[in-house]
Length: 301
Ligand SMILES: Cc1cc2nc3c(=O)[nH]c(=O)nc-3n(C[C@H](O)[C@H](O)[C@H](O)COP(=O)(O)O)c2cc1C
Image 1 (spheres, rainbow, N blue to C red):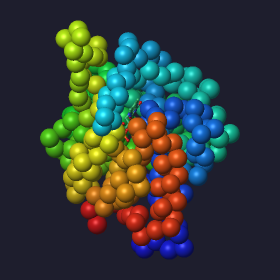
Image 2 (image 1 turned 180 degrees about the vertical axis):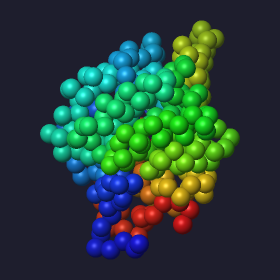
Image 3 (image 1 turned 30 degrees about the vertical axis):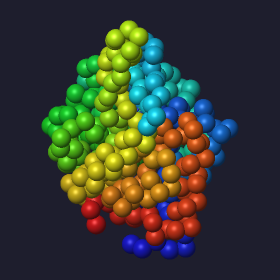
């Protein structure tokens, strides 16, 4: 399909979005936090902060360390939990007129099932992003996210319950072969692969000689991970035929263009929002001016 009339809408699974530019999970909260700063309804959409079945307090401080090339974070999935999300946060999206994809994770198959069943009858969201790649918590989806059989199973459990919504599976870059996990998600019925989550890294405090973060490892994001993310997206795009949503280190319009060249059909902006909240809208405007930069079909075509 060729782009025409500056139409940069994109269909991901059963759902069409007005353009392919999204805010990444964990950076834009539940939608309200950036409401006065970014005209979010002009974006393709936002991916809300990952929620779990029960509320989580997250990790002890420090949680973020700025680096010259990005940031390390160890938030630990602080979130309001499923019930409060559905009661208090989901209704806000309608008022904000934002197209949202809800990010979820869980520790067990039963928990994933319960969350998916809670969302099944609801409206007011366009889909679910399964966060199978969070590096800042023990015993949760990162470990599961490395196991192709588990990824396929969880994906199919969730997709079965939300057939009319779009289901994205967010994968970790901390794997030698991201294609294995991406193919498992595709086999489970995913509508797209979101690639990538943060790269695991760490840092040390020279005054104490100890690691900065309580869990030692933390999630590295921002411009420094751009080349890694681009390559992982390229690998995934050559491994599956469903669309790829490119994430990681985008801090300019040019960076976003590179994800389309690598095979993504949509992009998410994360860490750059902290210093340049207007960037996502600039990317939308650039794509409207140059619809040929966008990619309309998934896979490696
Ligand atoms: C402070 C912070 C919190 C994040 N929280 C989440 C989260 O809750 N769920 C998730 O899937 N990704 C989370 N991420 C990862 C981002 O969505 C994104 O995949 C990653 O930061 C790479 O993109 P970037 O370099 O543009 O930030 C978080 C990242 C940061 C920096």
